[in-house]
Image (cartoon, rainbow, N blue to C red):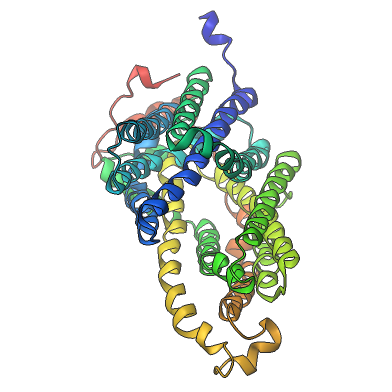
Length: 468
């Protein structure tokens, strides 16, 4: 018992868990930097890189609702461990294939698909765990730290992997990744992650795993404030993906294929993300969280996307990347704090998985649209003699890259419009006042609510090994 009681709880437990995830993210980002270099060196084609990303993304989207119901049924701590364990094992498989000289590109598609499937558990379990580990007042800071971990890994992983790759090779990078997964699992085993308290919402949502998989859709649909917030993110993410998918092409077009300039802009964006994460972790976000979401989107559209499009040189592009990524943690942290406060902890897995599915569904859609939009229409139209060069040349110039710049300008303006339009709808503008914070059931109510309704199937009793 003494050993159990000495394990960290509350904010201390979160910081321990966060440190393990920080190390794991760094290792994963190093592998994410090294693998494309290996693949391109083997194939000298972009096609395999796109298929590698698709192999990860498709199961992540398809299985998210099912994963959410699983997260709500079992220990969030063990779901995170299972996700990290699967990622670690797939990395070990790739490492063994490299060591034996048997690695083929199709092996990476399979391991990435397996990794994507188990990653559906990671984010909803992590987000839902935070909701029961720390007070609501700390949600913004916790998300700021989480964003800081992701942005920090994006800065240091390419530097570390780039410096080490020539000395230790791909197998050395993969070995480091495996070690970081062990560190992440070790910290999770050490901390206490409480089970979520029972709520009326959670009891009402019980049923078969298929019914629970659909619960997140129904839950959001029945709450106009949450649905409105989600539509803001759906539209905003679409605009952002539409623009930033072509960021590399924009800069390389305008710098005569100068990859170093692109690396400066990418680094500026990563530094902005770190600064935003530090700001949120120290500040916690605006008192009215919805302002952080709506004004954040409006400013991000102007300062991140539109400024990038009209910028004539790398200092402006770097400033736009920095400012856009600085605002990202404020937008995400404010939104996450609203959802964590308003959605009952014992249904957050299901609800948050659907949130992620809807938000990430815009990625392939925008990627498909940007190809004909830029290559097929705007780039030719913005060249000398093109149909749009005389009309918009004063704004973004004419020539290679100008069509993509025009996408950035208008996508940014539309993202700004999306953010500001949220204030026109009371359900979105007053979301924090309209939606009550989640509350636990009193013991007597919980006992009554635990009895399943006749038309639903009861949840299986949780295994003792899955409880803290």
